[in-house]
Image (cartoon, rainbow, N blue to C red; front, top):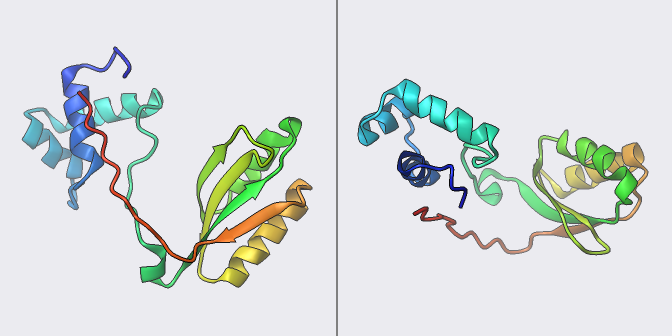
Length: 153
């Protein structure tokens, strides 16, 4: 853990990971719980985001419960093309994660869309825009959701 995180940062990170308040002013509610001002909480969250401690704050939904489908994709992307490829992939709103792996298939990403056909069309478009022809489409057949909560001490 980064030594620059103080005890308030750690308490804040533990608080916002799960059960984020659904409220018009969620950071004010969190501030009240932690004995801080809303401005203090917002400033800390902004600093933690700028320092890449917080990647995102947002809801997680089960695609199948909303009538969507998901897939995991794996690609072989030459190192010289990584930035271009990932910028194209990341421009699609259905892409939720994008990972670089130490493997022949070195770029992996998840894609969520209303139908398998939409995913296939988008993958074909990504291939056309990037020149990467081999994109493995590994549709989810059964989804296992786990709760990831990191107890920061």
